[in-house]
Amino acid sequence: MAARPQVDIVIVNFNGGKFIEECIEAVKQQTLSSFHVYLIDNHSTDGSAALLHQDDERFTIVHNKENVGFAAACNQGAALGSAEWIAMLNPDTVPAIDWLEQAIHCANQHNATMVGCTQISKLQPELLDGVGDAFSIFGLAWRGGFGWPVENAPENDGFVFGPCAAAAFYERMLFVKSGGFDESYFCYVEDVDLAFRLRLFGGVCVHSSRSIVAHVGSGISGRRSEFTIYHGTRNRIWTWFKNIPFILLWAATPLMVLANVAFLGRSVFHGTFNCTFRASADAVRGLPSVFEARREIQARKVIGSFEILRAMTLSPIKLIRRAPDVRPVQKNTKRGLRD
Image (tube, rainbow, N blue to C red):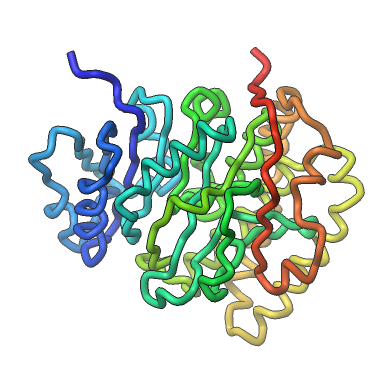
């Protein structure tokens, strides 16, 4: 009987034909070979599903009959495995040869339950794609250091709010107990939402300075497409109201509302007002379900407002500049969900 792998890698493909083959080949070359890949094709229409067939027994291919969304497909892939660690990897990434090895080393060294990777722009290798997700007191999230010169990448591992799911590692036990990604999001901001919940449940996220991937970034959906803007806007509003502890909900929601009004105003000049307004309206309409989920999350959390506030980025300057927010690693004790 085959030994259980150390890592289950979930790759969700949707029309990733021009990227997926290079991603798969890079995974095959990993220095840490104890992994299994679950390739979930979300009913691609560009012929890329035919490129997924692998002779490698470490690969399992699943063809969905419809596009169930990134969040649901990630959960689907994660449920098929049994490894201690679950890695999410976008099809428009190319991981370095020691990507897996370095991430698992980081997790073990720092007693982390989430690990984020150093993401380099594949199209502009002199620029960062991101070094961990940051979350602002204004309710906005961003990939820290997006568009910054690669020289600004942290030299050492450090705490971040959460990992970008383009290349992220989650401890299986806590991932499963948290319910995984919220499938109602479909895609976008689902990684920030999950990181927020895992933090509330005692999780710790460390950014690995040595686990590196090249990432196109919205290579399939388009960074400024209506699809991206709609889901990003709606889902960030849901993430705030679902996860923020009560004291911060009361104290900081005016800041969040102000930021979203500013985004709505800016959308007028970018020609995206209708899409942004529709997403905001749909977010409000969806709040009853969000508050229902909130009740369960808040009842199960093991940390409060102060600890979440410490993990958030308070500086509006860092927000405006999309600055990295990677903090020095200190000794920590991993905690989990209440049974």
